Length: 299
Length: 322
Image (cartoon, rainbow over all chains, first blue to last red):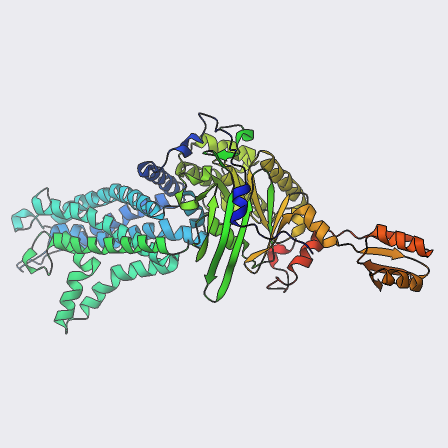
């Protein structure tokens, strides 16, 4: 049997390079321009935003973040009382923001779904075919997530503080009794702004971890584990103070949640902003590792 | 949007796919072992081979999804990651089922369009051309495989690219759909586009492909036009019906042919053309009642080529069953 074997490169030379001139004013004109990273990034941002708003569930998840955060904060506030005569060290702002610890789980789920949902359906191939610069996809996802969480977190935190103020004052935790009432004073503003940033950073950390892990279930497990297991471990490390101290200072949730405190700052193992910084370092490390792996691994 | 007949080039470069010496190992499996071929504009190139021959991996390497260990894949002269707004250079449909099931067909195309700086108007155009208008606002998860293929085709056509690549586009299509698909592929090539279509069933490519790249075990076994392949596989076998079998065998054997009896009064002759057989028998005065030159079908030619390259000759996979 005769067969024409592969021609390889030599064949390339024989192909006539007689490309027709491209018609002006067509969509093709876009291909002439080269290397404008900003255009690429804005295309990617738009694509990721379109994806997020057209997938069912996003609206529910955002609602859940607000409702759960406010509801848990309000419930905790409602259950908070000080017995008459006893020395009471309650931090009303922190109590009002207790819901952050629950709301963060839903933020994490949102972030995980943004990337793992694509890996589980195989749609990630379409994403990287449309946008071959993978770091740009990750950056666009991070930006869209950040923007959306910002809006939701502001609502959730404001709602929590308002509900907390109303309920705690009703429970007798008033300034007249020596409490730092939830109000627009310095420490409360720090806690409020910090809580919004905290939720943002939890989202970014989750996005990074999910990009590394890829599988939805595994990523959700990994993220929730990192958020909720260290605080439990810290509780059981009472007999090992050095270890306990380390866990409380350097794990994302323990360190990051220091930002909720407005009173008794001297007793904290890490200061509020430093704690948020630790969480930011975790998020940055996760995103960096995710970016490197996206580049190294096959899609 | 440009008229499709104005398509054949990007930036003065001819629209092509050039795959050169691709090697790729997944663990202990050598998926690609020096895969090389060129897809030229203006024709449909069939990419055939048994399952596991490396067709999908090659396509993923062309799209920059899998990084080859060695070798290169260029689209109109450029590696995929260098393409800006790549969907206007090359459109591809790999796995039609790979989409978020809860998103509507239109919204799936919309995010793709936005990623290329294209508008919703372009989305509506490709939806209409793919015949999906009535289903556009339905969730893609509820689509039949055939409808997903159409959605995949619409996605591939979003950027009106001069190069197109379809992985097993006939999968899940009914006979009517297969005929439509063949015509569609031909029309894309007639526009001057370079079209690469993979299939593990040669019969699907009959009447669709002009050129064939036959793959087996991660490399190219044959790179040939459809006409050449059939001619080569047909060889010069001649079938003969005669009442005087032994005389014919003697005469033809003397003439240097290999003759085999295939029935009570039929013989298969190789080594001589039909004309030569007729001449020899005429000279010797031996009679025969029927003579025919054997012509292979595309399927036979392909089976002959891939006999040694079939990695898994097991039960047909589910996707092959229609």
